[in-house]
Length: 103
Length: 103
Image (tube, rainbow over all chains, first blue to last red; front, side, top):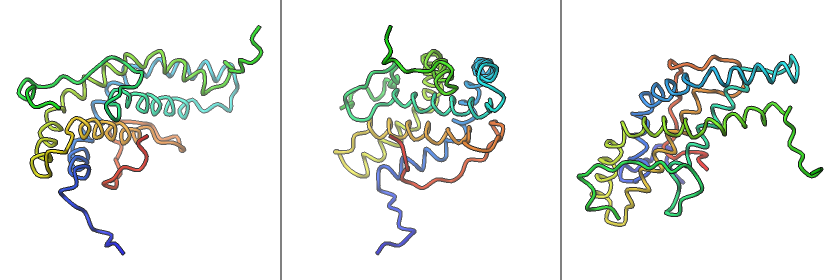
């Protein structure tokens, strides 16, 4: 039986996720700023869909779903394991200080 | 005539996802630019974890996992269901330390 509050602060995933949670609001602001750049495209597309398909199309929901899909696909920027999946060729720049101990 | 191709271009989700796929590379560049701002924090944290836990910690994998979790949690900016307007002031729920569904 486990206590509900058992959190190991030496668990690597937990430690990283604590930082993740701290940074998430800032990330969200920056990510929203990115999405605002593209919102007009999604809006236009959703309006076209509504025109073609019918009034029961909920454009807001379509747009939000598309945005969630963007985020889901963006995960391919950070592939699991070593083998890179098919995806964009963007990589994280390492800081020079840590070039020696990669591996 | 390829009758086995049954993609409906009037399917709202399909139409939106075509646009999503077209915009994804641009999104990815912009999202990577955001992540670069925060990369040093994740790098520092992963190095601390490695110091505390041991040499078998793969810092690159920890960082990539944290980045995927950021993207997963950012989906809450675009909630499913009710037509809330997505915006930067959206309250992010505190999540469990281990992430639910980051496939």
